[in-house]
Length: 248
Image 1: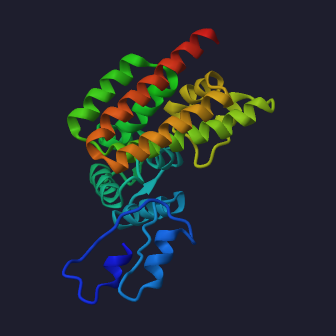
Image 2 (image 1 turned 90 degrees about the vertical axis):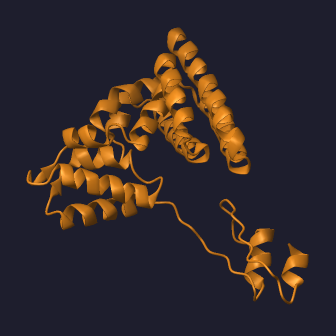
């Protein structure tokens, strides 16, 4: 990149996309110090920004939303701001005239959305539900989904499991751990999440996170390899969960 930045009259606009580069990273320092180059940060949606988006769309539609419905939406939104807003507009249109959005509305209208399928796919891998996982991977491949986004969501889920497993190892009850999560876990996922905490050991979770991080890295570098690599990773995790579940 240095020879390019030294050009007095570069004939092309060059765009570089990178992951989470910390301050002081070589590429960031090179770009930020050059008068012809610009570094633009792109931040993923946080729980607060998702809440703001939900509040904005429901307020414009003169609707309120129950705590359970809001919790379920947190598990479905956030991968893409435009897609999240589109799903919320669709949900508000569905609930128009009711005055309130509840969890049944969320399940009815966003039940087939890719984000919801994604939660089911990740849960299937973490529970060792190989039949559901296999079906979900077929749909994932057919839809041409973004493997790096899915790998990132799966990695976040296993990081959460690792944190909750630490609480279990300290003597807390699995159901109580799930009930104490913020934002609250969607009620239909609570039992399955409690089983996941009990099935996966901290050591197994650390290995799972390493594999998912590698799958995310590969899918970002080569989109053609992303789906097959991620599929293989999730199948391995599903087999591990099934084996550990039988043993437990």
